[in-house]
Length: 107
Image (cartoon, rainbow, N blue to C red; front, side, top):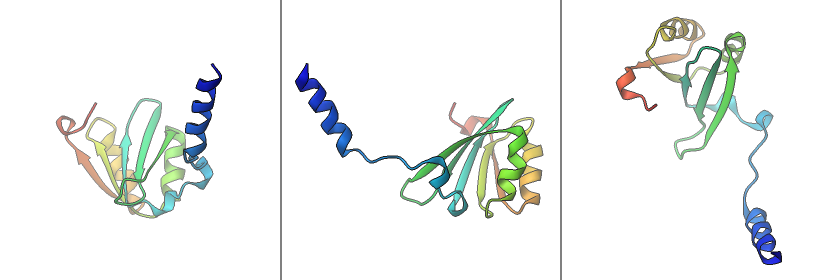
């Protein structure tokens, strides 16, 4: 049993720690994807082209404040009932919005 514990510790020691939520550079995003839901929205942003990504979960009430504080970026979302409303709101804030057909999005 002691050998299992040592292997687990050595693997953990070599792994990189993930930055905390406050340390993530949301203002340096190049592209962002939004998964629209009833109560919560999942945000997935790309910091750079090499695949570094950040994720965040927001409620409807916090969407306007969050995107108003962001630098303009390209935002993609699935075209659904509320997507057109959010696209108009985000365009008014200076973001570029792309609506994707549901057949092109991954469940």
